[in-house]
Amino acid sequence: MGRISKLFVSLLLLGTSLEALEWVSYNQALKIQKQTHQPIMLDVMRTDCHYCIDMEKKVFQDDTMAKWIAQRFIPVKINLDTDAMPINQTVTFTPTFFFLDGQGKIIKKIPGSWNIQDFKDLTKGIK
Image (cartoon, rainbow, N blue to C red; front, side, top):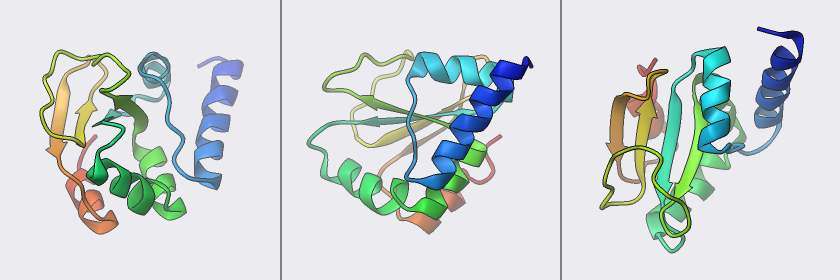
């Protein structure tokens, strides 16, 4: 990994550890994944989804949880109201979370809204 690339990844991880979870675009995530080999976490949501808003406020804005996620995954938020789905999957329930490996294959799919502990339990084995 080049010096600038290491610096970019370090700054990205540092930024996410100091405040609420920092989301990146899917294209950015693919670039970061090539360097870090972390799974991509796609949060597929809608603007007016009550459960999506709950997850954002109660889980992703929690500093400890944001740091925990940033250490394990590359977080990407896809708003179905404004964004195209970057993978060939149909989503009928939001939020739905997809965890993708370096080849773009789905490691795990988790539909629904969760509290911090349940989301940790559902995701901690994903690599």
